[in-house]
Image 1 (cartoon, helix red, strand yellow):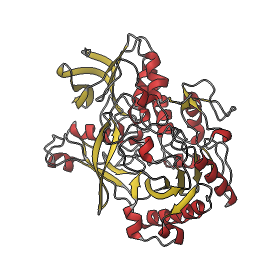
Image 2 (cartoon, one colour):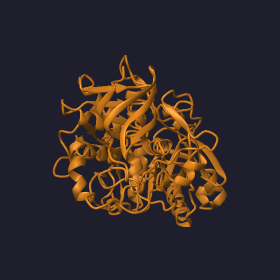
Image 3 (cartoon, one colour):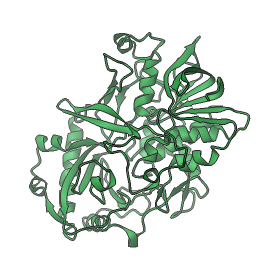
Length: 486
């Protein structure tokens, strides 16, 4: 049963919400209510959520929401986001690489690499490295697949990249040169150990913490310029829960969507959707960024193992990440339909910006994700460079690669080839951007401009998508922000 009041209501039980709920409930005098629209696990966390070799996000998954997406003007698709306690962090590939020091140059004052390093250390226990850069007592285990246990694709890729002159990097979570090396993974004994298992599950017994799954927040209640509660639809029907502080951690799609449904956002778009404007914040849902990805298919020379982490090694250059996925996606993502192995080419410093668009017929329906990928020609150039580099490396991996697309082998890719293979890394960031300018949504402490008692804490507040996958940085953000939410 939902309480009538909580000191803090956290909307969204994804990675950031799990961290916030756990950290805020450390104070036994503070009541915390965590609301998650998706399912929980009354009888224990199921195998698919725990198994680090499985990404249960395929078309038959019951733990995702599907959103319509427009990658370019001519490429329409759908994308999935986690809709389950633990969020995308309970379903992903366990990639736990920190943002690079230079990424924080775009963040407001107080968010330099040196200032966030203590929080990166606090969230982890790194079993491979010790010292000033790494934590040894945090809740999230971090390790890399040892050389003698790496998948043949990972070994071959690592060897080919080093032969091509790329710098070997043993610790991708340390400042230093770009290069090729093993991926830090939040895995322990084969179990994907994200914030759900590491932060939230150990504190579910606390009497001051209530976790309500199957609870959809329809509106943030604002009175006198202050957030004073939320309206929730759950097993008890429509309820209003009063709160001293509301923290929205519903993810980079749902967080701006909820703000807009609550009348907080671009006034012109809200009026078109028939929503009363409570506060005109033009940056809500605007100018998000994400990592465009090209999947290069090839064929194995012989059968290779399955049941391993989907990504064990990567190559980083200034603007690219090359990902030698260990298995065909169909074996890791049931129902994906991708039966051949691929090498992913990712533009890690994209300049193109997208927006989240309300459905004009039903603003409560999943909004359109208008990515506007490749609208900046430099992004297209980066991906073309990456495909050529990937082709060279795949050609050098003759021990595992038997057949390669002739266009890649010849270096003869064109716009049609590139667009046909365009996808997204699902790292959407910046849809409720942090800053103090006219289009920023939250300040440097994640407080929503113009509305007291309301914060947003998830990847939507990143000024831009980090040059590495955002999960570790999101967990760091939540850990730090919890200290400001009292």
